[in-house]
Amino acid sequence: METIKAIMTRRSIRNYTTKQVSKPQVKKLLEAAMNAPSACNQQAWQFIVVSDRDILNAITKIHSYAQMLKTASCAIVVCGDIKAEQCKDYWVQDCSAATQNILLAAHALGLGAVWLGVYPRMERLKDLQKLLGLPKKVMPLSIISIGYPKDKVKSVKRYSAKKVHYEKW
Amino acid sequence: METIKAIMTRRSIRNYTTKQVSKPQVKKLLEAAMNAPSACNQQAWQFIVVSDRDILNAITKIHSYAQMLKTASCAIVVCGDIKAEQCKDYWVQDCSAATQNILLAAHALGLGAVWLGVYPRMERLKDLQKLLGLPKKVMPLSIISIGYPKDKVKSVKRYSAKKVHYEKW
Image 1 (cartoon, each protein chain N blue to C red):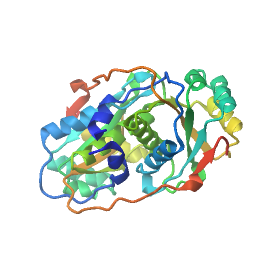
Image 2 (image 1 turned 30 degrees about the vertical axis):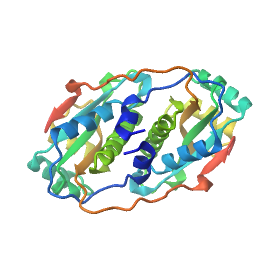
Image 3 (image 1 turned 135 degrees about the horizontal axis):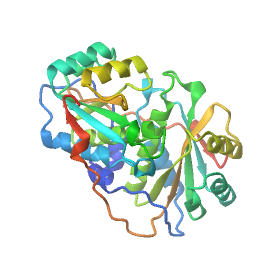
Image 4 (image 1 turned 120 degrees about the vertical axis):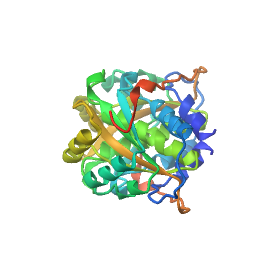
């Protein structure tokens, strides 16, 4: 799929068929994630791929907006490794760019995905750290729920000229 | 350009030719930005397009890593509008996704761009707010320097299997 088209037609996909996402597809999504830019090129990120049905279900008990994980094929949890940061306090931005790359790559591969926020909801974050056995310095930023889209979802136009300013405010 | 290829070959581009980026190209980049996902679909972002040479030069005095703006065709400053947030404290992630969309769209259009961090460096942020006349609640997250690439830059592979964990840490 052409890049601008992928960017303009990507939507949050929460309903999935029973078809499973393949290992090569997951690898492609992770490659896309790790090719995101990062501050000082620090790449201070870590990824947890969850396909185990019990763990996916357990996440839905921690995260009230994550119910679609019950029918998702898998999830990728994008984490910032604070200890590995060279440019301090940029991990949220780095991991967000990585998350966005995964969403676009998923769409380009014909998959559907949705970004579930974890950080900065600290209770949710700590529960997820505990469930996945993450070290204290490994902070889950987002969970990406992934599967084959059940329905065709129309693209939307969000461009607003009011939000564009030239030279100064 | 195909999406996965764009994601995998995008690099930070800091050297530009004198060729100017067109208005339709800038519009396309802004459309890409505003089609990013955002928490609660809040779209709490604002964009400043800077082409004025004096302002671009003035930014280089505020931001020591922004010297490439002296030869950039233009810059887009991506800002979070804190007052407009419905899901509090997600603006950094939303604006990072918008920034990443601009970088990918620029690359797909044959342009070169680089993400310059502003937030959370608060002195830099306040200086930029002052220069651009931004309201206090409009927080510049990033400056994206844009132009036509002067040199061909090789793509790199950043994938690291060590950063992938299955099911649990």
